Length: 350
Image (tube, rainbow, N blue to C red; front, side, top):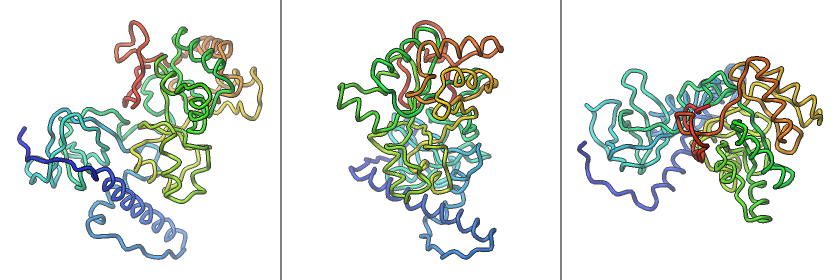
């Protein structure tokens, strides 16, 4: 593949963040304006630079509140030309080196080319040289990257103790249960400070998946856009999938997730373990509210997060003809458990 010589400077990431934040805010303003007009309200107009206006309609698609709309992420498999339009007939603007992780904001419906932002430039790249590591644009935010009939058991927030964390995650690994954990950044920082242990890495080493759940579990819809971005960054989990605290989202929250290169994974079964605080009720809800392909919500500090609860949930689901997602074994689902990837694949090997 031919490409013009290009070297990304040290400020590329800063320009990327600043430009994307501006575009995301512009798209949010467009969405908000449309909503206000629909309600017969007035809203102050926003001046959007011409260069951003050309992309606002496509980015608005990526930020829509529809449950099937997400951005994706991918890795370039060759030095990849960035062109001014969605095919090889358009002029080359720059190129992205092989092995670079990029955010894919929009997929052209005819050519399949991706819209990207790299080195201060918006452009289009061929999907033939992109290995996807994020969600496909048609992933359902309630089932996430689980494309199977297996049930995914997910646990939010923070474990009470390290021993409780180890007991649950080791039992799950040894009994062919792949968990999805969503710890807060505060939780990760506390355990690192207290034990010198990275819970996220520890969980991944046991074949479980770890997603972002904000830094301190604030309700994102109550925050400013800049505060949302801070909540979705480090010391929270840095990855391509996140779960908004309380499941609370709006157009601005969607814009913040897009700016961070994350898509959202919520749930379709809420055990309400935080409310009932009952082991038997939590197990019952996890077993009998689940359907094929469900994502079950629980929390690491309550009674579902234990070897015996996991055993009963798995057995109860099996009695209903449902299986649980397995720990990470690459894409063949055979052999020993492998360390799960930091960036979740677009289809989990459940």
